[in-house]
Length: 315
Ligand SMILES: [Zn+2]
Image 1 (cartoon, rainbow, N blue to C red):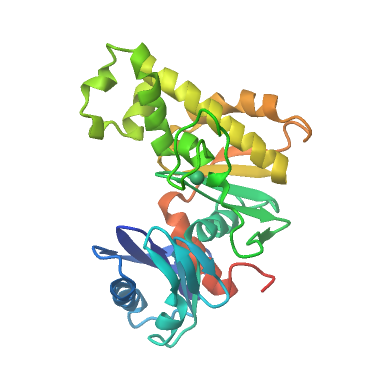
Image 2: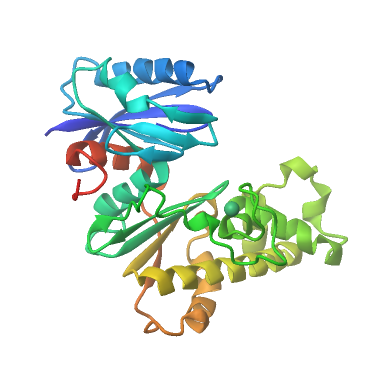
């Protein structure tokens, strides 16, 4: 079976997987990143990709990177996470390897991975939302990943759902979907309702230890404070989901990321409100599911991009 190297480049580490054409992960190599300057990250990529290539015969290398990326040239136009502008990631790496190198946005790559090998199988209209520190996502319409005019399509996390009374988003706007409904959003909801729960056990924890996982688990165990936060969180999540349905009416929306580990508990919390908020689109025509590939979606999707020689079939 042919293999490609799929790389998931994050803010603290980089993972390079040897991925089969059937989406299987045959080997994985990981490296921590301490310095995020372009030259240091490039060298780290060369090292970890070199290890993944080994003596093998991968047909191509695909890299999913944060930021706004020109997928035809592999230039990172803008990446706030790394502080890069017009960084020639693809061209720099192409010089170092004998096989073609493709670079795409990490969330779009994860969407392609989940679409091709996870819960997207059997659909032609699909959305992936990764609920983590932020919200990453991507949209597949009629079988093709939407990239947009300047590769900005799919930034679902930054549509505002509470512009007047929401939390401040990392992007500077108020009440973005990401600010309200990411894992970080769940923590904010917990602090927002805290005054009503002065004896909450969650508040006994040092502030920095109160993560989304603890709140989610406490909600599942019936803790009143956590449940109040969860209810507001789910309400905001449903608002964003109904908007996505109004924009693209996908056959399926898959929820990934840490918070989605709540599984059916999460889906139950949002289904009725998504239905209520779905007005002009026929109700029940978009299925909500939990994503299947988890943290592997990024590298599997990056390798898929490499096999396809680009993020979309239209290039
Ligand atoms: Zn935002």
